[in-house]
Image 1 (cartoon, rainbow over the protein chains, first blue to last red):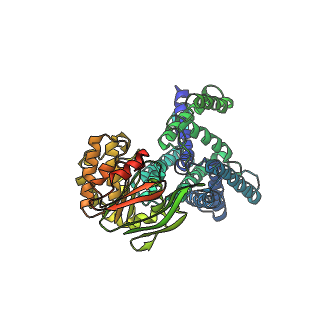
Image 2: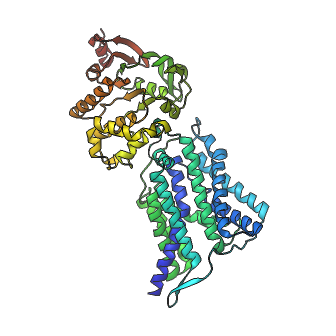
Image 3: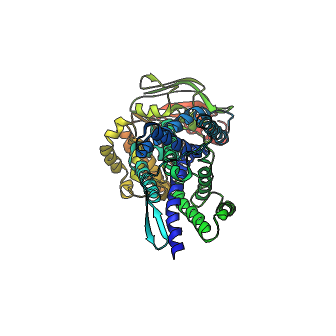
Length: 295
Length: 236
């Protein structure tokens, strides 16, 4: 019973986290058709920005969280301007593939710059709320975990409201659903792209702050989240936001269940096996649709 | 309202529109007819800025728009309703319509406009909370046209409103188009079905191999001989 409860708690925390990181990749793929390999690095940038702010000013890590989101979002928009926007509509360029490689380059440059400036050492980041609560005999959950799940879910809900209620949110969705029709409605596609890249990076930055007390802050702290996000994105079907959230919790559950009932050593191999099966049975994921190239 | 001078356009290394000149006066319904694959759609895409014209000049409402971006043209009031059903499939009918009023100036009048659109297309009112992908082909076409009317349109360009629809639905769509034309809207219509188009047209232009080969105005319109020659390859 305890093990089951522990698995569920772990699923909630891990799933929310995965959803927070991967939703940005889905948004970017949905609107731009770019598989954004810089998403993990934005997680790291969020962690590093928050650490720099908190250790530099001595102010609250909550403020650090806001700083992290802003820094990551700005960097996301900058990387669109430098690495992606110039590739759009170029004759003779396979946009999807070139932009995909471009995001790799962005990730590599940012990661190495951070390593150059901060060094490879892992840095401590304070938990936002200390302590834990006992659920039953033998099962407890830290406030940090509760907070992580709560903030992730709140951010995802706000994102949902933004995408369905606001002018620019609807513009992003419109561009994702039909680019030509959106342009013919007077929707500025490029502005939607910049905004999407900023949002995606900002959400990743938020995830970075939430992960920082658990994984420590280091130039490589985004590598594992990137890998997991990629698995979730493929499982979900690229570009589907609803599918991403469902997939994040399924992957979170599998990871938790394997770790708790078997061994954490096997969590990643089992996920890889699962992905291979998904790719064979449903290559466009649980919620994705086969799509054509576009830009 | 719209004046084209020697417009050339195409994709990649293929030139499709081979120099078209055309004038559409205010309040007029001008129709481009001709078989598929002869450049009518490409011409509309070049006018609305989805692709760049290779050469030539496009003037709309007194200003040169040859190099203007698609989204800016919408603000100027030139609305392109593209071929097929370019609606947003996973949004509701109402959300689709509201996006038609995306430019800020149009957004202010969206509430009033949407009532006008529902008046022209009562079926859209019945379906307003349904996702666009669940609509029938005819309803989707109506949605695409209605959405175009949500902006501050001075002129609308409609690409093959009858394509792929059952004749009885086409009749309905054409009745609605007639009420739009009769309201004084300037219209450039692309249509394959000549007889349908004739019922609305103030002027007709036959497009063949990317050029206008024949134009006519008023009641005479295009003579059957020329049309038959173009569609069937029968010489006169």
